[in-house]
Image (cartoon, rainbow over all chains, first blue to last red):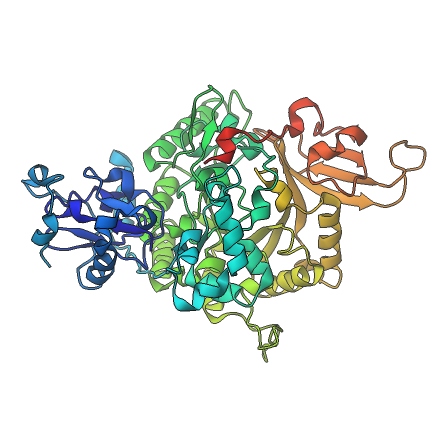
Length: 107
Length: 479
């Protein structure tokens, strides 16, 4: 795996990334997306699409986001696949860059 | 990914696309040397690079000689399994410090940007080439699209500098439509280039087979709807991840043929070495198939049979001959024989191109000719169809003959001579079939090595800018 969805996706979930993913490797939870590590082909297309810069190459994953490496792998196995873009939550803007969102992650 | 040709989607395309399903694939890709260095790879992959190799590569990191700035390291689980016991495949896929020992080479081999009418499209020959993906499932170290894969800045004819971009369906459809309308209005030939209508599009990248079925289907239907009759798919996925050719893919192929019976698919596949598809025993020998020929890796055999079961598509192999990978007549002989037995035509072998760092990969041109010629001894005529081509910026050029004897009375041929023949030309291919003859230079790896010994040049391969090869530059060394 190389690409990981980090904390800033929580409660924002814009899904622009889903639109460009050539292999449909995003999985959707109640308020966040994750990437399936074995399905991702490391094409890098999703990173610039994310309006809140929540997607990282595994190699560039900040120290405080390391937990999301494991979380992406775990949740991609249980959440349903998402292949088409949808409307973000109505209050997505308000949650951009809000710290400590990980406590609000719904499974 | 749902790419749509905006309002151009026809009802035929809509009906076809509605029934296309995407498959799920686990390529289990490892990207980056860093994972091998830190031990973040699965246990069985840990020894794939030796300690010494990792130390040497790490030392170059961040310098001008950083091998990953030239081409990122990438491998699938399937290809790793093949590579484990195969030195040639390891050479193909493992980074090596020698790659950046001499960074001479062209940042835009073939001067493609001179022929790019639309972002992501090259229209140089009779067919159009489109970039539909920026990556492959794994990376060949010798990749001649390294500028694209490593997303390097490339200078365009108008002087602007930017990475090469991907083709978009709507843009390409619009270009083909306009081109072919101009051709029709001008009595069948384009008023400026003299070309006939665009009948064929080559989907390349990167590897189109990394795209999902829906994405491929959207391209194929849009191209068919605008009058494209033949679609080529340039792919190494049969070697890197044959499981991509699954039942969902074959179902999509069948639906496509039902919806567009006049469109032909031409799979241009890329096997370099028989180790990429043949089973080996504990001693490293290929295994006889009791039914004839040799035993194939099960997943690859199934994929090839699935393609060959559909008689409206063709499968052709083309591959460069690269140092320490397949500069081996015996391996090439087995490969050509086995591919043909499985219904894959041997189309081209190539001399390495003048990419940045080419001196680490390229075998001297005359040696390549000898290797291929040697490999074709003992093959039946139908197995030996492949020609040796070297890609001059003017067009694909056959290395037709390497002769050992002097040409009586012709100075410069004392050590023998080499005959090149242009197989294709830009635009309306005026120069097709023209020949150039040069005195031998057994060390030559590119055209410029023959500049001082040109005897006859009807093809114009050695006139001025013909074999311009750039010196290493900041743009080409730092990705």
